[in-house]
Each structure stands twice: as structure tokens, then as C-alpha cells.
Length: 243
Image (cartoon, rainbow, N blue to C red):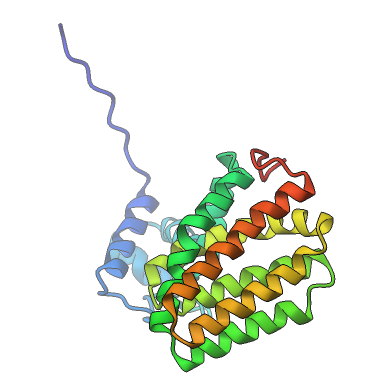
């Protein structure tokens, strides 16, 4: 039997330029804040048209790797912001029909060990952020949108106290998906706010005391309460977030 191969497709020139620039950024030849040559100079070096360079730059800007300082046309290397990355991942997850059950199970897997790690590693500054997040929820939960936002911010503050960058980059898309699911539940279960206030207080106290067992235990209870809230609200956990 004769073997057949697929046709090799030529890659657009701007993709090659973008890949070359990205390689220099990822190997730290170009570092955060470094200025790039002008489009004209880049076109000369790569041997392409300025329009090709412009397309490559646009692609890297969309990925958060290049940007322009305010009031300047000069391109500089930037680090992708965590929320920008999370938005892209979150959109992809929604398109993959993520359900309330998926979000809740992910919280159960991630949040208790995150709380345990925060109790071990937290600094005084971390503790202030965690306490402030709990206070913000207690003081600003009258409407479901604000309550969901501040509830997610508490998880963010606890997560930041782990000082694990990889964990936090993966954590943020989940929290962005958590907010709409919490809004739906809190609209129908207003009493859930008081339970969240109590749980956040207990978790904060455990982290303050560096009590890793209590931090894990209370975070586990906290996340389980969300599932109970969905049941009381009559929300089917198999429901897609996009519905």
C-alpha cells in the first residue's frame, strides 16, 4: 500500500515573525519592560514588509506579550495579566459546556489545600488582604452581584497567600466562573450570606493562627455549603453555566 502524506502548508510570514519575537521573550533575551525596535527597523531585520510586522505585533499584543506605554508609540515587552489569561480560559471552558457541578467539584479539589497552604505560608500583608476581603463581603452583600464578587475575592486573597504563581494562574479562571453561579444561587437563597460570613471569619482565624487543619476543615465546609445552597435554590448542578 502506498503511503500518502498531507500537503505541507506554508505559514504566513507574520506568524514566523511573531514566533521569532516570542522565542526571544520566552528565553528572556527580551525581558519585561524592554523596548522593541521600531516597526521599520523590525521589518528591515526580518526582511519583510511593515504590514507583516504590524500583524505579528498585533498577535503578540492580543496575547499580552507586547504593549505600548501610555502616551507613547514605542512597543515594550509585557507580562500577560492573570485576569486576561483567565478570561480566555474561562470563555473556552464555557464553550466546552462547563456545568455548575464542574465548578463545585473543582472548588472542592482546590480550595481546601489552598487554605491549608495559605495557613502555612501567609505573611502579615496576606492576612490583611484576607481579613479585608472577608470584611468587604460582610459589609457589601445586599445584592447578589456584589455578594458574588466579594465572595470570589475572598478565595483570591486566600489563594494569593500560597505564593504559588502556577496555582494562582490556574485558580483565576475557576473564580471567574464561580461568580455567575453564585449570583444565581444568592438571588434565591438570601440566608446563604450569613453562612458565608461565618465561614470566611473562621477561615481567616485559622489562617491567622497558622492552624492548617482548621483552615482546610472550614474551607471544606464552606465549599460544601455552596452545593447545599444550589439544592435549596432548586438549581440543577448538571445545568450548564451558559444556559
